[in-house]
Image (tube, rainbow, N blue to C red; front, top):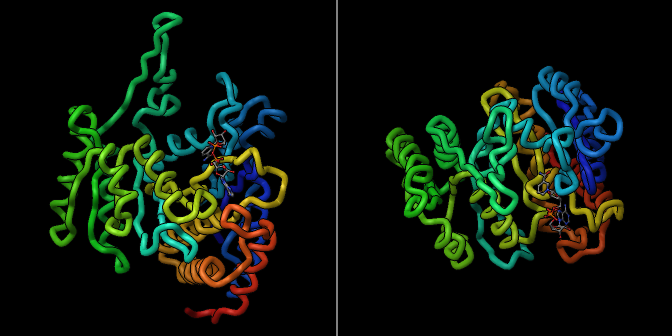
Length: 358
Ligand code: NAD
């Protein structure tokens, strides 16, 4: 049994996390094996109310005992000051989760069909002020009308994320193409170093093609012919922006999953935020988090060479995609009028109808 931390998060977080746990419980029942033991952990606004911090030390310590984490979205626009750090950034940094893997795939109602690519985003450095320095934010003000923002790019993190991109491009179902997205024409040193490391990793994969694009032009190419791409690798902020754009090509953030991956730890976390305007209404799309949990089960299965976890991830993947492709049960973001719970119940129904070995 894997110990999985569970942080419900803010906004729609508790609704989609509860629903995902219910799906996993039924998945375990279906295959007749218990795979997961849950450890409830506090982070976010509830943790701030109870312990005076959005990421209490107790949560950090308990996470170290876990094999992975299911992390709900967090309302970080409301976090202000040193007692309200972004738990997501802390966890990515503390557990060196250097790759944020964000798959994008068409569903029948998508504006663009035949889209099937994955964005691999560097996750621990870049422009983001809350993860760049050991004890200070990397945005600071020399006077009240001036802000300086630093960007961090290291060889090690660039190489790590490039290795994940090539490993994914080498998988059976992929087109064996890695596209590096950067702005090395202007950010010659930072993006230059990132590109250099990607080119070095390419040397180990002679059968995989590599191309590269400037981020500004790539944002357009992605909309003009999204079906062309396979694995896209880029730095932190470019990846964050591109992946939301990419989600828009296929139906929105409600179906955009992500896995934060390091050597020894992984976190299932939907690509979207806490969606405050629909929180508490029971209509948030649970699919992004469900697909993220599926990625986590797959990661655990591969990491520990564990058939049960791999089998659970295969069944869950098949069930979610059958609901997306064949069912009318959809939340409003996909044009339907079903609730979060109804979508999960539909996924559970399909899980029980699928053969155990697929
Ligand atoms: P958001 O992703 O929460 O919402 C953007 C749009 O997508 C909204 O229209 C929202 O209703 C919709 N949406 C998102 N998830 C959905 C779902 N599961 N089902 C249906 N519709 C969904 O982004 P935002 O509004 O820019 O940010 C809201 C809060 O989330 C902010 O505090 C932001 O900092 C935070 N945020 C957190 C994370 C995270 O915790 N990983 C990621 C991004 C944003």
